[in-house]
Amino acid sequence: MKYPPRHHQEASFDNVIEVVKNYPFGTLISVKHNKPFITHIPLVYEPKEGDYGKLVAHIDASNPQVTTLVDGADVTTVFYGPDCYISPSVYSTRQLPTWNYIFAHLKGKVRLLRDKESVKKTMVRMTRFLEGENPKYTLDYDDSRMERLVDYIVGFEIKIDHWEGKFKFSQDKLKKDRELAKEELIRSQKKDVSAFVKRIFENHENAQKTSS
Image (spheres, rainbow, N blue to C red):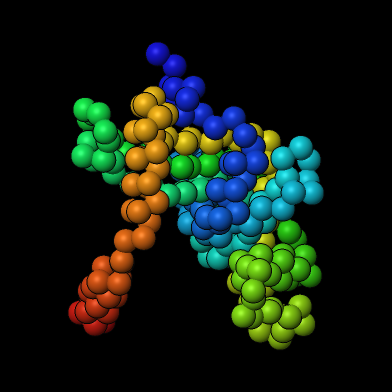
């Protein structure tokens, strides 16, 4: 059996990029001497580069993964769209439990941004994108704080040469059940996380006090 099944493979590049645009906090994966390096960072898509466009990002200069980010290095990025557990109780027919999800994988080659001006321009563009259609903040190119920051980060681009969408939303079920699974995926994203976040923050602060 081929994996993943064809019906879980997204055929539309535009749909894959929609995931990247709407969920830009991705996972950067690279390898050096057979050792994987993984960092979670925002990666912003820009279309004007090659057949598939590019991702722009920056990473803390002290991050060990920086040693893998040389010009021409192959990297993989993963973007996580909505996902949730689908209980059999959701369906109109008898089914088993499953998990539905929307993920995007982009692979490409690194190009380092070696001068401060290029890194600053990238930061301005990234901020503009992440602020969205109604920005509440504008990062000015001549902001003096950036001048100090660029010495502590490494800016880079990833020219995309391969893409893959892993979209699992009960495509093998009846149309009615597919609709019910879709509604469950939407409903799951409206879950109130305030109690969880508050608990995590409190536990984190207590752990910090204990260790200091």
